[in-house]
Image 1 (cartoon, one colour):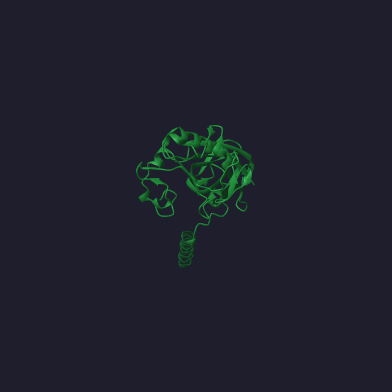
Image 2 (spheres, helix red, strand yellow; image 1 turned 90 degrees about the horizontal axis):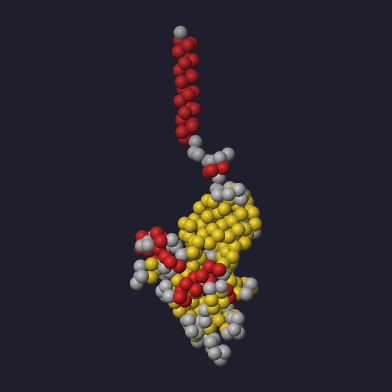
Length: 256
């Protein structure tokens, strides 16, 4: 009888030990794809007539006038990847692409494992995002008041900010200031781009590059913008719609 009792006690101790081991073991996610992180690298660049372009670099526009871009930043939001077999997945709510910061044009974003052939995003902020209070966000958040993109007078965000100087009369002086700030719910654009198929894997990080051709912003499908006669926009006037439309058309996407 005692032998049976000892055997039973030993068996119960084993169960208790196994149970404790199971509870104490931290979840690693190994062998479960839903727990294994995968990433994509999203970067932005801007060009002029197909050539790489930098802030404060002087180039000539289509009319031969010298221009220099001194500030350039814009929001993209509701970013989705498109699966090759159909369907989409949202990978980010909002990003501020800021060429005035060294790390403001490259992002490492979590993404699911899969094969994709496209990306879509909003140029600007949707109505709910645009109605946000910037004081409620931490300093590093894209919608933080410290990003200097909020219009206090309009209680809205500036979706796109492009400032610079130009030489309007050919005298060699860049004394024509221009400033184009677009930011209203009516100016929000949803854009979709097809790409070559690419794979997201645990040990393979594909890159998606968003390219902006500045030349097409000033001379685009929605009409030309003359920095001398149309030197600024900070509202929803015809220049704002032309600027936002040209900016959207000036974007392209490639993968590698």
